[in-house]
Image (cartoon, rainbow, N blue to C red):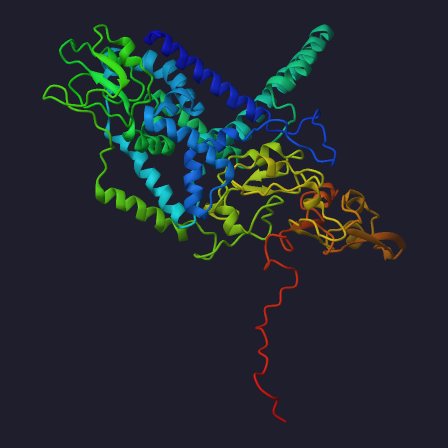
Length: 564
């Protein structure tokens, strides 16, 4: 196979993996054609989280943060093992964010801003490329302290979060806008044609279910900033920031596949630098940096004299005019130790309140199946999969509701949507075990075993229509999906301001039955703040967060006979 054919294969691989990743994000949703199993449980038909489970950085960070390896993350070895032989092939052949950065770089930076000599200089190795290694050490140091923040900048989690919570909802809004604009013209055949196109293509290429997410501005701003930097520097993210690329770069020092240079035939035309994607110094006369090479093979294809060649077990001896390859990043001991120490020092700064334990907001309602808050924050990578798949658009990324440590982690907002009792999809798509995969019977419970509670509803009698205004209303009781209903009514006589008697049914909540799903708060007709609201108190994941918590010290039994 010629080098040109291999390059075409690489481009096809990039397009294929990006399309597959985008398609899996599209399918991370509740669709009307899902079929329930014999037990009545709705299951996703596709392994939508496999892209995240293949991420070795996620697996390593989770291992350091909570001391366990989630079974799915063992798939990360599928990426690490070939890296030991070939180097950073994942960055140049597979990574969807790397491919997106490269395509955008070609559109602007490489075609317009960096022609000729400017492009050659831009593609030489620069000191800023060491930043990603220090960032990696900071995140790993924080993970050692139990603070999992790798999901903020991990490329796979970042792209999944950005596509799922920002890009796809924006595409849906744009498609609806075009359809409505055509309908506004008033020409019936054109309107009907637009509607048919929308109904046909929508389920295939668009998130057919409209969704809106809190914090989308901050998530979108980071994503746009990463893409915009490609206008200034070719593949800036991959070269200077990406922590996964840094991890793979460290493993690539063991690679037996590398670049061999022939100084005798080189005329220093620098065409290799003109097309280099990794800024790894492929030119003769410079030390090739193996940890930066993404195996684009452009240098070998562009060399007119065959002076560059990728092969197994290349000659590594160096000369004065052609230094030996560099297999490890140039990192100073002081900065390495400082980065690790900085990550460890961030532990108390990330906490919401108490410096040594998570202190969640009482209105912070986590998805069903979430472990205690400390463990949850040590597992969640902010990928947004659970938010995307939620059928009622109930899960949203937080901002600072749980401190900086909990940034962009999922929280249920009942005023926007409620937790569907028959849904266990969030646990199915979680790649790290931050949300346990529950069966339907485990979530709902039965007479012998209680189900999962994510909180408890409380009636605000100062805003409730039957309680405060003598206005009949039974919406919350009608919407309660629990059987038997957690909200029950008592018919009582109330008096309006004129002293006239009014028969109303006033709602009460049974905290032993209420699971905190939020359906009552979602349906409450009272404007702005609902008259019935859900708090995290009573959640199954916490032994301390109870409605009636006995804080009295335990009574000590006498050790001997009681004195008279």
